[in-house]
Amino acid sequence: MERIVGFILELDKLKGVTRKTRPLGLSRQENSAEHSWQIALLAASLEPYAPSPVNIHRVVEMLLVHDIGEIDTGDTIVYAEEGASERKAAEAKAVERIFGLLPEPQRGTFLSLWREFEEGKTAEARFAHAADRAMPVLLNLANGGQSWVENGIAHERVVRRIGPPIKEGCPALWDYLERRLEDERRKGWFGQS
Image (cartoon, rainbow, N blue to C red; front, side, top):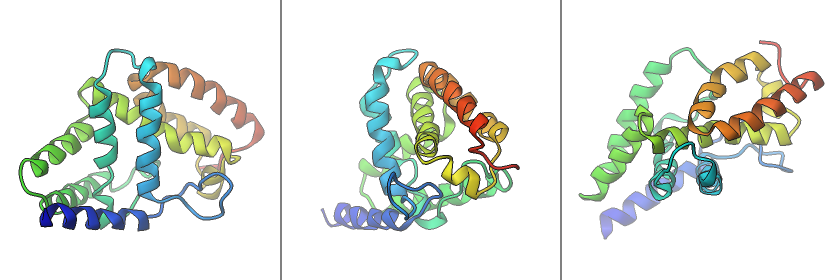
């Protein structure tokens, strides 16, 4: 019990990891704990649109653990492409440490879920990736392109980075987003890089 409590208290640090996107109606940036909670509910809501049947319980578990390494590494905007392999190695080391606070079998279960998400090979992992990539886009669409404009992210860069995983993991969601992104591009909701 002591180890589980220690793990849960360690997870509280995820609330202090800030991201580039703002919650609707707020001037502050969202944190990674909020992001994980919201994408878990997004995925659960989108289950009927999965291109093949998924174990939604497993998807939600993946989404709840996928950013835990950010406790040690911080968050990096999804559009950052340089240094990706170094960031992934640091995150893997972080999740080993954090999940190592748990006893077995919880340690192995959570680590396996994290690895499955990272590898992106199962239907569940692909569906989870689609929700993960979509949520910042949905917030940007609702916030007038806030983080795209502030960080100089061009429409083409957004589509190139988030399009393939969303299209693969939830084609119906990509159909919706692709139209919305094009509409907002015409309004100038993107940066110039």
